[in-house]
Amino acid sequence: MFAAARTLLPVLETKRALDAATLRDAMTEAFGNSDSAGAWLWKDAYEAAEAACVLFFPGSVLPAPAWRYSQTTPSPSPSRMKR
Image 1: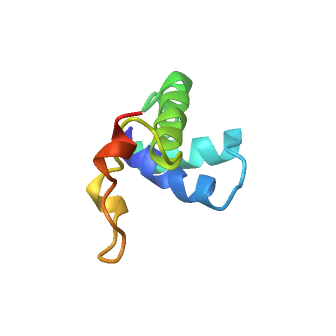
Image 2: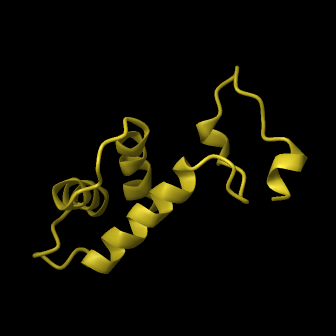
């Protein structure tokens, strides 16, 4: 499911909507098969969308994963993580 969330993250970063087709494509890519084949449930797609939002919104209480930071991006400060 985290793979689907990472697939959805660029959609949020470009300010596009997370519509049903986008969710379906991300989940099918992440799970290797469709919902109609039983590979995943729509509840899982909504969870992946929620995880993508948590990764996207700056200032969340959780620091962003290390893979989000480039060499030039500073790490979050401890004061920012205390919110």
